[in-house]
Structure formats: structure tokens, C-alpha cells
Length: 431
Image 1 (cartoon, rainbow, N blue to C red):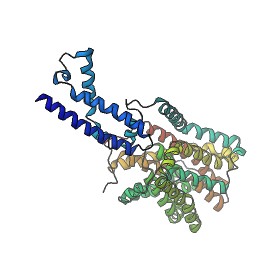
Image 2: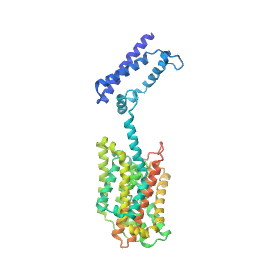
Image 3: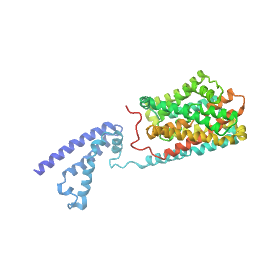
Image 4: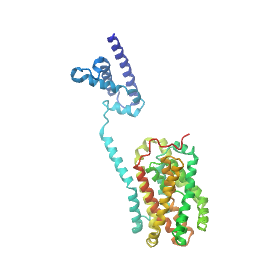
């Protein structure tokens, strides 16, 4: 009777192994038929030996003949049980087929690990690069002022392209299922920050041009650098891009309106120009990146590890350039704006985060809203101040804001990058 059962089990296992071999051959067609057959036979024989062992050879407390061979076969049997779920993963199958013992070759993994660790190190030094860019902009402005308007636009476009490569259309669809989240970010952008700017300017009794400049920059939309900081901080990049887009479009009305209400001066905004710039700099590059991710996933996966570093480099350059353009004014008047501008950004980061948490948003969403609230498009404020105000001091707060916006955002992003998002973090975008 035992012999009959054992024979049936062997026959069943042989049929089972044959099916495994067929699946392996189908999923890993790049391997030669002969190599696959040889490995399939080796695998077959292992299972056959396992099934053919008598019960006493598989027991944990029973003596095992042949110097412990039974224990090895028992391990082989125990290893056979997870085969079915493993079959569902083509990648695992191909690795197993390439090396039946289960040992993955070490060299590629070691090289990738070293490569990723270098990129991670350079990315986490984000605040250091911002500081270096600031110093170069102030003391060696000619090294960064070559990034003029046209190149500045191209740089912003590449920045958004690098972010788009990390996204899919499903990310945006999920965010749009809960428009209230984008709405909260919009309110934080055009309610919390402008009121902070006005309060700080009045409390510290800044001169009229500096107070106007501080209020102006606090009424500007979210900057593209916030998308990079959100990505580094493990926030929701799709939400960040949507919030940046909405606040930039909203700036057509909100920036001049709030500046008029809070500073008493109307700052005209070129509505058509701002809308076109938003389309060119934010939407088009992001969509190109998403489409690349959608239709060329293999290529995208190869370069996606470089995305944070590309964003860091571009952000550093885009922050250093405006500083270099007003280096002399910064040396003369910048010191008295250090405290007001630092308070403006620090308070905006903190209020953006804690208001989100108190509104029962998850950790990832709260990080995103905090960064969007704290990182303004200081470059836009700088351009508006230069274009619409005769007093050069009005542009100084925006130039100082570039430094603290990038420095505070990068430091916060690196801090959050080293603090994992909880596994049970609330999903604010589910159906």
C-alpha cells in the first residue's frame, strides 16, 4: 500500500515538475532549450528524491541515514511548498531559471547598490549644494548669471520632465478623485502664506519697499522646486504637481489681488504670458515624462534612479541665478531680511504640515502640502518686482526668499526622507 502511494506521489510530482518546466520555458524564453531541460531534470530529480523518502526520514526527531541526508531532503521538501506563488512572478522565475540554486549573482546587485548609495548620498546633500550655490551667486555671480530667462525656462522644463518620469496617469487620476485635498493646498497657498507675510512685515516694522517685496513674494504661487522636494521627502509628487499647476494658474488673479489688498499696491500680472508659461514649463514636460514612463518603462526604470539628483542640480542652479543677479543689493540690504524671510518660510512649512494633520490627512499628503505651502515661486516674485517697481529694494525679499525657500525645503525633504512613511499611512485618494 505504501509503495503504491509513493509511486503515485512520484508520478504526480513528475507531472507537476513538467508543468513547472513548461512555464519556466515560456516565461524565460531567452534561455536555451537545452539549458532549461537540464535544470528542469535536476529540479525533477530533487523533488522525486524528496517524495520517495519514507516518512521516518522526514521527521525532525527521527534518525536520518546517510549522514543526515534525510534532513537535507526534508529541507528540499519544505522549499517546494512556496513554488506555486513564486510562479506568479516572471522576474523571480527568470532569476531562478538562470540559477536554480536560488543564489542570485552578486556583481550586478553589488554594483547597483553602490551606484544607488552614491546617488542617495549626493541627493541627501541637497542643503549643502543650495548653500554652495548661494555663496557662489553672491561672491562669484558671473558663474551663475549665464542662466538667463530663456535658459531658465528650459531648466524649469527639464526639472518638471524629471518629475514626470516618476509618475503615471493613474497617480493623477487618484488625486483628482479627492479634489478637496488640492483645494486645501490652494487655500493654504493663498491664505496662510500671504497673511504670514503681512503679519511679519508689520510686526518687524520693515521699510515700505522691503515690506512690499515681502508681501509680494508671499502672494506668489508654488514653485517647481517644491515638486523635487516632495519627491525626495517621499510625499505625493502627483499631488504636488497638481497643486503647483493650480496655484500658478490661480496666480493670474490671486497674486495681484492679494498684493493690492495687503500691500496697497497693484502688481499687474501678464495673465496670458503666465498661462502660456505654465503650459510650457509645467504641463507639457510633465506629460512628456508620464508618457515616457507609460510607453518606455524599461528605459525609464534605468534612469529613474538619477531623477532626484537631476532635480537637486537643476534646483540649485535655478536658485543661484537670481541671487547672482542682485548680488550687490543683497550684500548691502540682505542682512536685515534674514530674520523676516526665515520666519516666513519656517512658519509656512510648520502651519502647512500641522493644519494638514489636524485636518486628518495622512503623513504623505501632509508632507506634500507643507512643502507646497513653504516653497514659493520666488523667481516669479523677483521678476514681478523688477518689472513693476522702480525701487530696487522691492526685489530684495524675493532674492533672499530664493535662498531660504530652497534651503528650508531641501533640509526638510532630507529630514523626511530619513523618516519612513508609516506602513498604515492613510490613503487620502481612495475611491
